[in-house]
Length: 486
Image 1 (cartoon, rainbow, N blue to C red):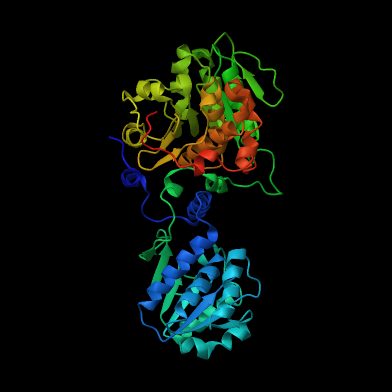
Image 2 (tube, rainbow, N blue to C red):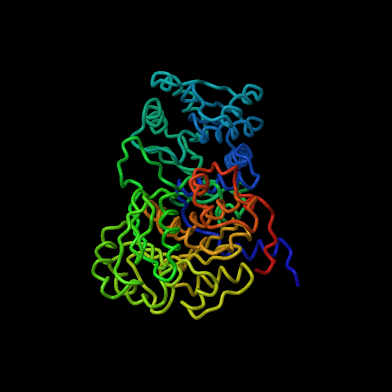
């Protein structure tokens, strides 16, 4: 019997992450929610109203809202608008420059709401507000939010001192301003620290457990002072029976941001972008073990298995302990399973069965459970119409891509993309983002139809990582039928 959307939503919630959420991850989830149709101004409205509802429950006669220039200040502006019907509200704005359009929009609305607004952008102006602050029953701290780094600047430092001196109860919006203890913290969506009151703001669950355009925010950007190697060095070990595979993985790693890519393979590759470490013979042999171990020790990430063949598996298992971080694909995915210091495995359904002894079920919920519960230690990226990524605890899904990507070589491209991202991201994030990027690159080539070739993906990878591949993935914001069998 086909399940209705509510039933599937309930089942998916077992994959919902719990505990604290980092500021960086929260930015990803916010952006994914917006890609799913919940606008930033809607999220701000929900956050501010939830904050106002909590403060209203304290039955205050007077409320002072301290607002900064970013979205945290915008949450405070919304809260002030909702509270002004029930009590006397004063908004103290610590900057004349409201940084975001949504915050500015809600700031302008206050002029029509009977709210007293004071601009206090200097220490003296803040100190002039001392009596107003001390007369309040509650102070709402909406000054800085999760993005603060370093020491407090003025006038924020003076504002913190004044509020601490007068001793008024403080309710913090999302996270307290450093140095200003809060009686209560109202965290939006999920807790960021401590033991807060968590306020739901309408973020769809899918914004967390499906990869989306927000995940691109995780990629570290190279600065002006970056030097060669800042994007990482990748070693690809493969080839022999299938020589195109290590070429595809190596070029994909370059296109995904790796600065230096070496390919250890039995055949010379005529590609000036790759450093070819040619081995002797028609395939990688035991005699190559010491040389490959040395190369693997030097690399930031090693990608193994692409076009390798079955006869070279023992070499990979022998040198795996010399790899700090590694992506194992294709012919490396067999028993005994190679294990690096930090491993990512990228099997399709048949390879998952070969390496674990368990068969992946057809339904997406079952696949998520299987990869989580029976995948090897490390991170597994199980490829399919919907990719499943798990570190045996967390589970994430990626539904980007097209049926035309069943052509040979696209898995090698994926391994190279994941390897490059693994140079700059933790394993779980690199695997999840790699699946998303590879699928987006394929979607941008939908006009190729069944004529799509793996090499076509290479030039689209940088555009997918930068978010410039013609827009976000169509699959991400299209309502999917999770009950459809693979």
